[in-house]
Length: 364
Ligand SMILES: [Zn+2]
Image (tube, rainbow, N blue to C red; front, side, top):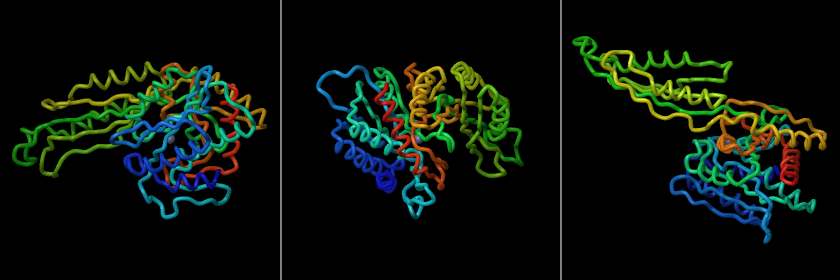
């Protein structure tokens, strides 16, 4: 598993680099073809191609479908570290080891384990490896939802949480809102009274919307990017802010969107435009809990206790859960440092996770 992970990590796949993602995708597709799976490339013009894998291939109709989700892309640029992959202290290090090439390796070895044990799942298993999860899944969302609609369960091989490898039974909904202010330019010394300061307006708006934070309810509003103005002696006529919004409940998500749509200028003469909104609805525990209990029982048989967690980050599991399809997330690698230069996975846990995924595929 470590050797395959090394090959996967060295073939870097930044979300925005179609050529690189496609090259890595072909490597992943080849592994599946070697296992006799049906592999279809879902071609994309701008982003990397998505890969749909169907296994086992059989002539008679399967009774139902399980969808396994993962992504090929990483947040890292190319050559972001000098040694892209190394193994030391029981961990495999490198960009994308944890999020989530470890998960892609786990899926392959889960299938190998089932073949070795002579167990063919009763259901059709569709593995969907997408190319743009880290940048919002714009080109993959429709494919994911289409497959999810005729699936009985969705297993997401995103990283597990913490050293115990907890799975994710709830995720916040996530969105991005852009607030754009148009003011009126003027000389800061000669005729300031003719100006409308867009930077001041955006500051006032940020102060207002960040009061909507309600961490206990799971609502967060974070102004992460702000820009505007040109020179200190000019009253700026343009400013904008990018705001990350998250909510644990669908009704809070909708309420927050409504509040953003309703904001009005504070300074006289300022013009406001609000764009964007939630792109991933919350994943609620009720769609995960039955699958979690099954996974926990399987883990107990292996002598491992499997915990659950609610997390603030979104994934493609948010889309499938929002359709009401039972979804269990965080079944991938155990490790730490996602999206950082310290990203790593615990080598010893890789076969354990493969066994758990194999067990789920056989039992569902
Ligand atoms: Zn991920």
